[in-house]
Image (tube, rainbow, N blue to C red):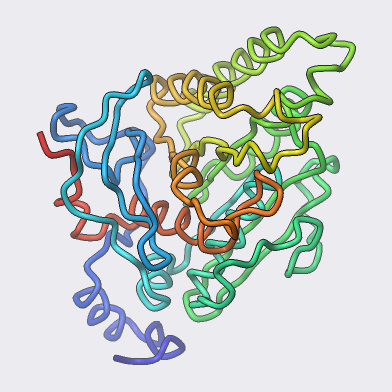
Length: 337
């Protein structure tokens, strides 16, 4: 097998590698964000249309059951996700531009995806300090100034570029106009992954003058913005792929007491479910990281009950790559009816 810096040296080598790793690495046509037409009974788990339950086996997330809706009606799963090694992940991402946008949970997701692409498997139980970023700050002239965390990771071996865009206390309701401005400039890039939820529904936001402690009012406003954004994004008809991610689940006993009532899993799952419905109705896939984080039960999974270790964030990245790259195993990964 050629080493990575030789894999993309010429077109002949690329053709050989494509034969070895027959993933979908071509460009995207207009409307490619819309799910391929198929009956619900044949819906594949890689298509990101299910809630996916599972367990961690040797640092890998293994699906066991799926559900299409809440209340959850679980169906057993046949097959498993493909686990991308560095070569395969880079091949799939050749010449791609990827954007990860959101709060600190999405920042950790970005770390996990970069680990997979760099072949880094060290420190699976490490929870990265959310206040630090490995890459240096980046200026993008089209990026609204309110986004203070702008970073770029570049992989020379595959000529792929990954961006992270975020800000402190990043909420959908608080940054709606700026987010639309950002998305309008990147909508034709290869892949965008976005989530915002917790800072729309956490104590600071709920206790603001706008909501005066009314959690239901804050939820309704957030979901109104989700519906508005999903409809607007559908109308933009971008050429790239767009994925909405759910928010994390919580280890409630580790969440600081003053935040606990806002971060109960029952509440967060309900909000995630309603937001998910808006995105699916608009034709966009939804990555279920709520249940990936729920599946991690070890003491080392999280220090604060909400930010998870690198094993979990790499697992999120592997599920995303299964969607984006569609390895042959995806054809066999489906509900067992």
